[in-house]
Length: 249
Image (tube, rainbow, N blue to C red):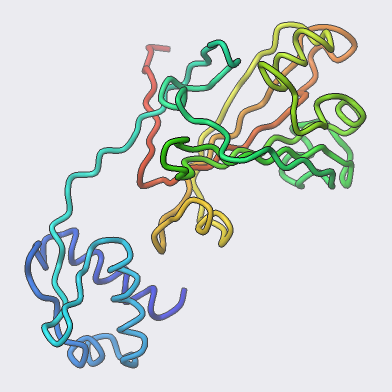
């Protein structure tokens, strides 16, 4: 971890713990330099990162103040699949999201961590469908969704086209390709955001992404029982959470 990130983490912890309450002024640059044993450039980079997060507000020749921060109100995802006139969607919270641009469709080797999930050989090719979903009114991206489909199943079919028609790839699988009633399973994880995810989602420095990895399994035709797609959808972890029922075993 870079030194400026260490300083930013220490200041962030002090702010969230109440050591520096909203409206208070953090120590001067020279004091922070001495406290952390770093250069002024390092201090300024750490402060700039926290300012980008909305935690600090530098005032020209007046010091740096802790901003009043409203309570976080994340959007809660549920774990259900729904259907409307446009097709399937996963969680009621995302029903109003729309593609902000046409999908990007490429072909390439299957990511190593998905090889066993898709029952492929290392290096086997997959069709990769990337979508940026968000608020159509503001154009702000809310989630990045990438689908991986085995090339031996999808190449040369409508699944490899940018426009898959009403209902998307799932309707094509169920209604046109005869793959039966689809079944889904998911898992939730979090990780550091990539530079491209930071740019597309407009993430503040240090904010991770919340990732939902969903597998799609066919129940009919020649591919019955096979995982025919893996979808990985990533969101700003500071703005989204997952809620789920807890049942007795």
